[in-house]
Image (cartoon, rainbow, N blue to C red; front, top):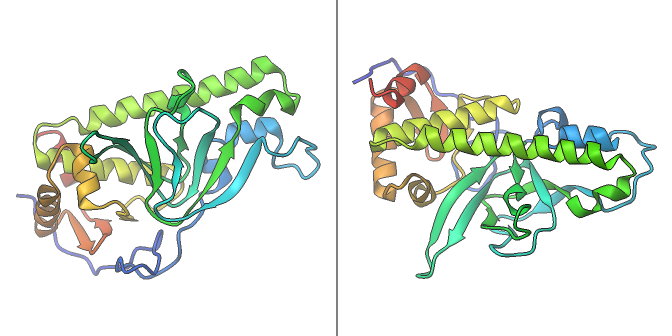
Length: 259
């Protein structure tokens, strides 16, 4: 068992809404445009310029999304890709018995909906885990921007390529045999994703439920709760309701590696 001393606990500064999650501090912060996956496309379209003179409706920015609101449903016609500006979402596939299979979580700066481009249908449903903001890029209207079609297509290919590589790496990371390895890999993955978008990677709020995490990792919700408690007792992290502070990332990496 890995043992470390517990430092003085600090409240989580990145995402803390007054909804009873136990984390005092700032409200959910919007990701900086430079750290958003759509930034390269926005730069191409000159959306940062006040005199860009582009047709309205190609990029809808800073749209508010309520907790529990659905962005699109499985088999809806493809219309756009979406970037998370703040908040978080879960990607689900409804099952015939009324249950939901969670197939992913989307965090600030990340892309949603790109997997619907090939078949012109969204293969899953995306729902907000909290009050959030998104930017919506209407892909079919991109030619109206007046930019060369070849350049637009190349930029979209780059976006999609990055998304595919990210998803493959993510699934390879969490495809572990033990519940402890899966949970450790999941927490490290969240940490890396937050850090890559300019947030504090060692402190974050788990907006998803234990049941959602369990569905995603192939674990029972009770197992998720038990493993998180085990990690806290081992000194790997501090868990204050849903606010997580990682104390020993090296120890988590050792677990993922099977040490």
